[in-house]
Image 1 (cartoon, rainbow, N blue to C red):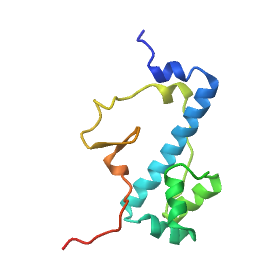
Image 2 (cartoon, helix red, strand yellow):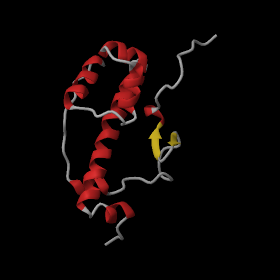
Image 3 (spheres, rainbow, N blue to C red):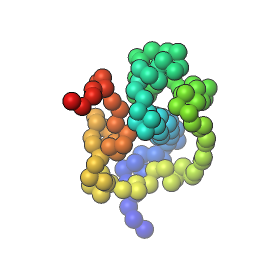
Length: 131
């Protein structure tokens, strides 16, 4: 049997597991929103206009600072022309590492303490057209 990773050991505490699952779900939802925004070439201002809110609020949603209710999640996905659905899996499967950063694709980037696939990058500046 292999040795448990730090995360697997840390998540044995129920409070830590609860916090880990909150952050995992936030990352999953916001990552999917960012991916759809990129696929549909919609920036934060455009999404804000579709939702009748501000670009600042969209930024807070995407970085996890704003509390996303199920209703707000449904609103965001609807504005992006998508329907959200929920799947579940065992808690244990969410804490086992499936790949390390070193094994990850070459197009991953590091942003603070999170490693993001290139496809989930959020546009931070205004769109510019090529000359």
